[in-house]
Length: 192
Image 1 (cartoon, one colour):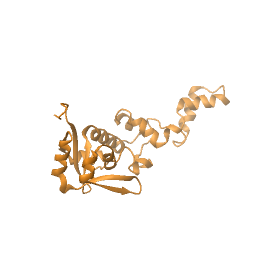
Image 2 (tube, one colour):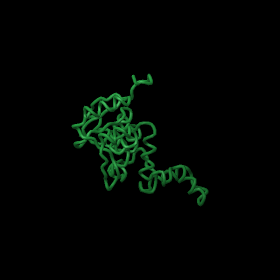
Image 3 (tube, helix red, strand yellow):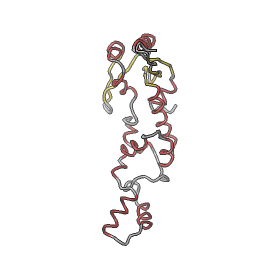
Image 4 (cartoon, one colour):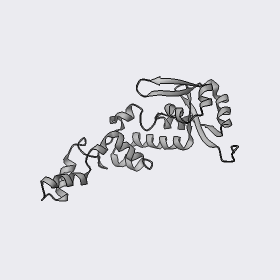
């Protein structure tokens, strides 16, 4: 229990590319589920089914799909110039459009590598960068080092040799730490 009497927030941590990464357990599970969905799905329907609540909508946004018409929007737009167009005719025309002209349908092929924000590591989240937002400043200043990526900006890294001191510092700030290298790797988008 923390001094305030509430349960300690659980963190998972592990070695990632020679640095220690800490992630709130709930966030790690969420990110790992997204990465699993992204890299194990072959259709947009599969990725939608496998995503946690809200994540599919984020995926549509970052992929640019929300800028494209859905089937109903296409029908309404086309009916303005072609009043006799039936919903079935519009649907057939809509499905005949290339996938870069319409929103993805459940049966459309899905390839995570085709989405720039995923390839660049900007979505669903860069765990080393996220630490800048929540790790207590005292821990960042005493044990952390800011690193920079030309693609994604600043991130926070911790040295593995400081593991014991880091754990003690996090515990002193009300966290419970559990080492789980595999979950940290999955949450960070590593598939091995």
